[in-house]
Image (tube, rainbow, N blue to C red; front, side, top):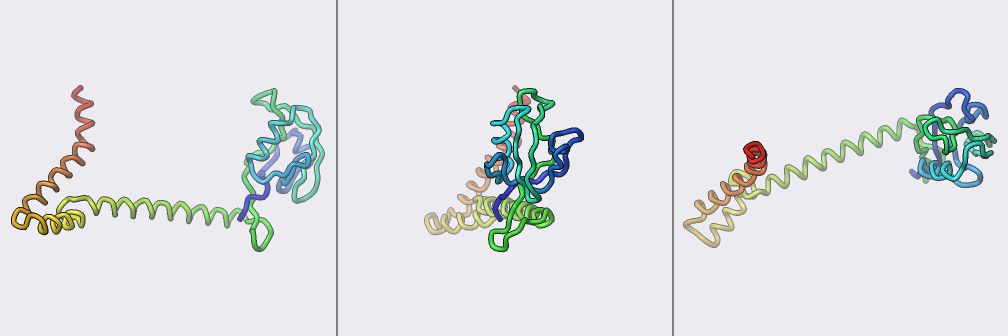
Length: 179
């Protein structure tokens, strides 16, 4: 998919877009290609209130005179709302329906959280705390070098790491409270 225009949900009453009957997906403004919201915003920043503009959409070409933005009188105003990027299929052509974009966004969010949780579990599992895999690996390394004292050393390392983690969680709060 590639960004290929700007969709809008509605036009404001008595706005330039409403008066011109603007509909469809905006693809260009005054001959400048509009691929996304940022392109539209940049083009609107170049235009003054009460300038004549030509907007090309998927349904036709519309001529209108911009209004003044109610929030900032120095900015041009079209009167379109709920503006989003429109996407085209690269291979098949045609615009991507909103349902497909919603499904892709949901999967993207789900995969992000799965990656985040899995990475967190993996990192915690590698901590040198005895019941975890990291603690067992350290114990085997200590057995290789210290033979008889390996169990004691691995317990000391486990307790030290556990103390540092607990201090990081509770100690900082406790120090701030006491100070």
